[in-house]
Length: 599
Image (cartoon, rainbow, N blue to C red; front, side, top):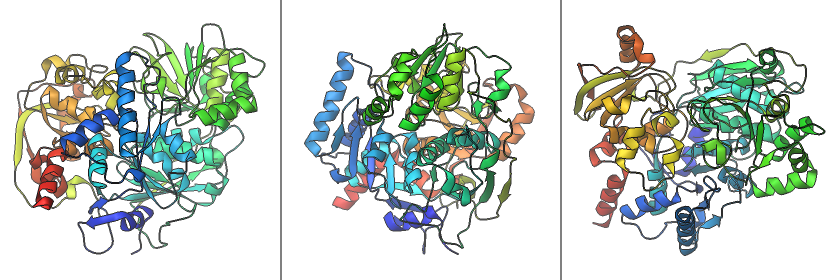
């Protein structure tokens, strides 16, 4: 049996695989990435790095730091943090890009750091974007990044692969953003924890910017990575095995809008126009759709027009280079002439930081990649996602609409499943014993995201206490949770738990609130990894969730605090998770590993 793309990349980057023979799903490998990108979180990563006893970065040539998230924050404390990060980069010889350079992922693409066939990681969930150029882009946690700085490697469980076969070509007006939104809505549970390989004759019909957007949003789809192989470098073998194959007809795609507040619902933009959903804010921002072609598409809609009264349109280029190119092309000027408010190149409102956030009662439409409740401002606001052209047309009209008359069709779901060995935690071999017993707390909503677990305002607040984190858990979707949870509780939850950001606080906030284990129908890969790296057992048991759904129908709306006890068997976890939990997390695990090596 041949190798999938991800298996081939693992084989070329590993420094030790648990299995014998070629890497297969479920094997745990220690991998040495070609590049690691960190951003504002470098400050917190540095603290983890030092906690491991490290003083020198193992290979600075493999590391890049780009300040991009909180770039509008000019407070003395944030400027001091930025200065300390820059000083560390200079001291260690790490390539450094200051605030205003752009979003890290875009900078990585522009600088050629992500290359076909190579493993390129980032301490940010949208590392998937590197897959557009044929790299294996993988998100890692802050703990992982500290370990890569210290030892040059990180652990990784080889995932399954799902093949997406594109047929046809996109009609005029349809974009890669529409493809990504439809994939998230049509197949919400089909690629969780897998690497997606995009293939088929339709790939050649997609522009590079469309590929970048599609790869970027595979994060929201629940995949570990989304790759367009064939741009050179590593390719899958013809006899490789896939968990599933999805056939997708590009020619049936039209402009779509997702939301509000979730990507599980995508509606043709032309159909929504009749509802005249009023908006107050619109956004042309983010690493998903902040490139030159995106700004030019929006400018083409807005030339000679003005943003509607009562609507604010915010625009930020994905990088300083993109903004310079947009200024030269006239797109930037056209947007400003239409009334757009310029923001510096960076993340800004996409992460809920800086100017232009949604206020209570407002509705926004954004060309970004996430519309989780409360992510871009108030949890009492609503947010939709769409392509730059639809965002621009909506800003000009004052309500959600498409730039012109388009069809309302969408590809019919078409998926073929293949019976191969599952890599999920349920099939892990049990080699040790151990159990955790606690009060049963079902909260059976699907798709609970990381913004609900830890809001953006705390992610880059390095001084946030455990109490701050504990009080914020589920604040946007179940405000009573923090006052009712008790130390020792076991949280049982639905599908795609922890979807969204790679923020490590999504796991540590639950621990601060007293949760001792998480049992889910399925886990988002970044949350699962962050939980294990911080010593929190996180396990997939869909059969238990199914049983509890029948018993606790109200648990889909809010957590139910029972008087029952539930036992979690640690033997359900794979060996790497048990080792990390036994050590008390990755920091302690790496310290012990280093001590054994020194002996």
